[in-house]
Length: 270
Figure (cartoon, rainbow, N blue to C red):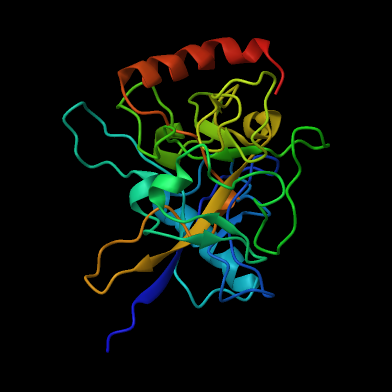
């Protein structure tokens, strides 16, 4: 009888205040498949690409006693041209679920549930790899943002504008990345402001200070790798270490909405 391998996916963001990621803890190593990273890489949104973000999730999970599983970051990438098919969607790299936090609380039963209004992602359930809560928008410092580069449905954006800080390789004053709110709270009670994976873009670039200014992190999770060898996606089973999750919305209208938000957000307080 073939026993499916458990692979852990994680979401990573590279900042000290923007670092929400889903990961496992020592207390519940067999159940944790989703966590927010407790610390970033120190290089802003330059996570070393998707591979570097996965490695960060893996390192945090290992330190928490859950390194025996493969972790992936909940992040999407963008193509270089409209016809570029070399794109990664966060929802496709985290497996099929279900995902639980470090204390065994279920985050979502499957991919569709995770990207629906019923997803159990909030300030009480989106814990870090140590099973500790992550600061919400009412606390100092604010760490409620998660780097995701994704639309609400967990898919990536069109090639432009940039929503992934050059596919997680940029840390300067230019560029931007889509983030979500792990506490499901914002300055207004609108769906975009309460989305856990696709709320608004970073302000002031992709550097450490820019990410710190928006209060974000990365998420990590694990996924169940099927016997067929299908690639696990989205750092599911727990959030990835670096709190990089963003709500992604589907369709052209969603893209234009997100673009509009990125222009108006600087005038709002998170």
